[in-house]
Length: 183
Image (cartoon, rainbow, N blue to C red):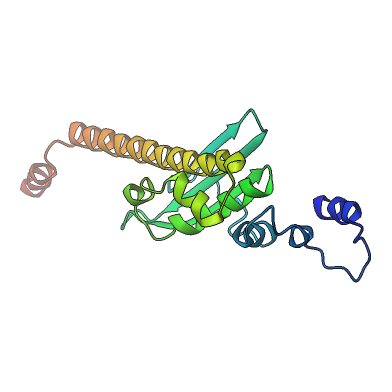
């Protein structure tokens, strides 16, 4: 819809015209923003109830951008094996989300916390008025990691509780087996 409106505004709404309206405005957006806007990477979502998925949902009330970034963590290695996003916002917000999902893959949760909004903004050559988009991406990464860590802690708490129950119900399995054999 956005492309159709932009094409009409630019007077390029013919069937032969390319469907990339931002290509006509190169002075406003860097080619990296245009690339990630026209071809966003990792759009989608994972099951938020999956214990290996961390979800970060952030928004900027001033501009109306909302970003959901999810990471999927390999339980054995602790590395992020996949990431996806859904963003409601401007082209810079979509591009920032897309870049963030590419950058977090293959890294540990500690490593992704070092990704700063300034790095995303520099990569996309965002103008000062669009820096809030890269800040949202950084906040979404942090929120996804926090959610994943909370889920991991909850699962560890459950497994510790299960161990306590097993020990209480069966304090020494070896002694019980020996007692049964002695009968």
